Image (cartoon, rainbow, N blue to C red; front, side):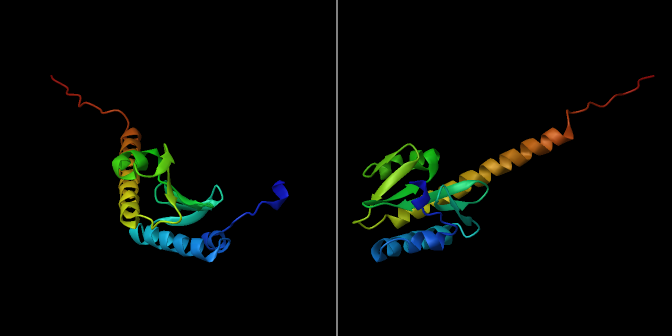
Length: 144
């Protein structure tokens, strides 16, 4: 039945596909992410809203009983204690749709992921620069 599958091209299209209550939650989540990471690019990846800044930051998706939030394994591990009251897995957390989302925690996770990606990009640039410089050359002295 792949012919019936909806292909979203924008986050607006994705959010518009849901009932009003879910749309309200998704719009609020979207706004919180965008305000926390204003330089992040918004796109659809894996047919869900995705935010990217020097690599993927977070994804989210709506389901019948929960909002899936995907900050990756490092985002979950860094906030493991605070996320312990929610169901989830290695790189995901499920926020019940019938309870308020923990937006302050979500903002902290997004800030953490931005910092992590920036740090990773800086380290990669440094390695690339060192590689381009080649091996260190010692000065050769001609002693007569």
